[in-house]
Image (cartoon, rainbow, N blue to C red; front, side):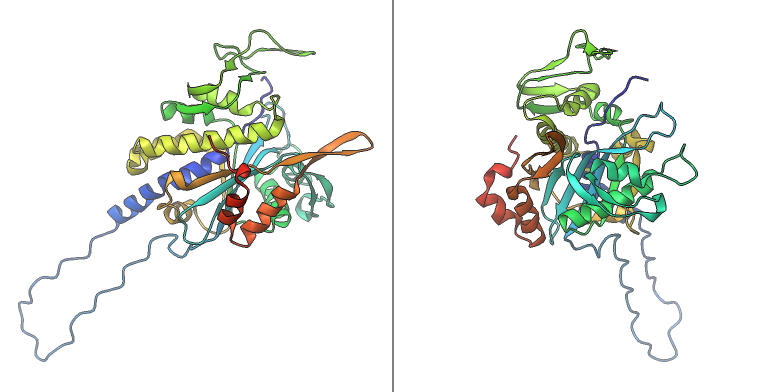
Length: 366
C-alpha cells in the first residue's frame, strides 16, 4: 500500500460533537417513555389522602457538564500495511469550551513540538524530552507483543503529556485514522472551502489517482488547489489538508485543517443534519472503526448533549505561532513563541476573548 499521512481528522470529532448535540438531545427526549395518564377514581377513598406528587424528571445525559471542558482530538499517522507499526500523532488539536458552553476555541499543537514526555510504566518508557508526536508511539508499545501496539495506551501518554504542557485538564478526547475521512466528506455532499493560498499536491494527480513514488520522491502531474472558494470532494479535502510542504510549512497545514473543520461544521448545520437523526447516523457510520473515543468515564452522548447548544459560528480558530529549535546546527523540533504560550495562560485564566482582542493576529479569519 502506498504510504499516506493523515491530516488532522480529529477535528471532525469536534464538528460532530458540536453539530450533532441537538440531535442527541432530540432523540433522547423523543424516546423517553411518557408518564401514564391519570384516570378518574371509580371508588371514593375511605379517608382523605394526600395529593399525588409528581416525580422529578430524569436529568438528561451530560446535564452536569458545565465547563470549562477540554477535548483532545488526535489524528494518527498509521500505516496499516506494516505489521507492528506504532501510531504517531500527526495532528494534535485541543477544543476548549469555557463555562457556559456557549462558545469554543480550537487550536493545534505542532506535531514536532519539543516537550517533556513523562515516564510510562505500561509501555516501559522511561520518559524523555523529544517531539510531541512520539508520545503516541512510545505509549502504544505493549511489552511482549510488538506486533499489536495499543492506540488507547498511546492516547493515554499523549493526553498526560499535553495536559502537563498546556496546564489544562483533559476531559475527553478521540483518536481518528484516515480510513473514513473521504467517505465522510462525500456523505455530506462535499464541502465548500476558501483556499487561502495556492497549494500543490505532492501525492495526487488531477484525477485523484496517486502520483508515482520513486527513490527521489513523487513524480507526474500534480493536483493544484488555486486560491479562492472551492467545492472539494472527499479525496480533495483530505489531500488539500495534508499538504505541509507549502509556504508556512506545518503551521499552514494546521490552519487549513482548522478551516476544514469549520467548513464541515457549517455544512452539517446548513443541511439540517443536526436535526435529522438518520443523516447523523450516516455521518457517524462513515467514521466506523476509524474513531477511538476516550471519555474519561463519560460517554460520547454526554458531551454531545452538553455541547448541543453551541452554534457553529461561535467556534473560534486560533493559530499559535512557533519556530524551529536547533541543536548543534541540526533541526530538533518546534517550540511555541511567547505569544502562543501566553494564549495558553489566558485560556487557563478564563480570559481568551480579551487576549484575542488584544492579539487579533492569532485568530484564523477565513
